[in-house]
Length: 286
Image (tube, rainbow, N blue to C red; front, side, top):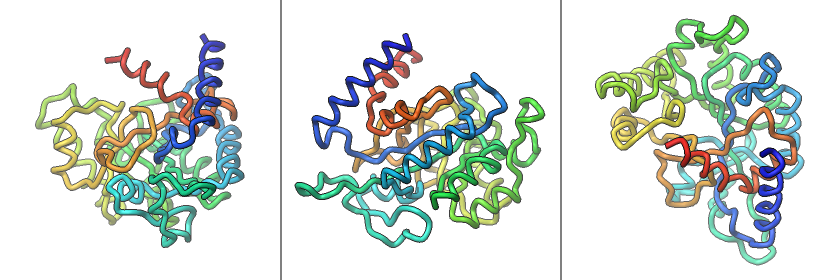
């Protein structure tokens, strides 16, 4: 199976390189954890591997933009963007196909789900090395209690750590209160999970929380409406693919980076070579 996965992604990667414009759109990367504590867990990207991925992005000329700027882009409003300090450089040409020989802007968004402390201890350090920023989606109850319900090594970030991330230009978004699967609970509780997490994080950080991430990618029309009604400006899913102008800002797609991805796999994922395979996997889970 692994060999077939490699062969098919290689073929897709090279086919995309022969069809300019086929992979256009803004790619949002989805990470969960950056840690060596759980080898073999696909959600736990090893520290050195994550550092290699960030270095590769920097060497290839990629610039991170904020989740807020991503929402502006899909709404067709343009965006500033890039590494810290470049927020006023217009990149409204991110989606239209560039003129012949014009370099395509290399913009990317980095997101981290679940609020584990290793995001602060390891991911934050690697991001700072290259001037990158990310958006950290946290379940508010994890932060408030200092517990995740996992092993002792699996601690969440503290309010102080999240505040430091925010001061350094990173975004903090909501990921519900308790990481509940929102379509599996009653509507009243669902709306409280959505609204209450926003309120708790805003109180903890003393700043607005504008964006939401659906826990486990679980949402439907009612959940999406609850996110809108709670005052968020956008949300992201676990559905694969790049985001093009006109995409639904409350259902932005992301590309999952796993612990098992080699640097070559990472490059292929950035190019969209795994998108169709990930869609098949998502379809089989329905």
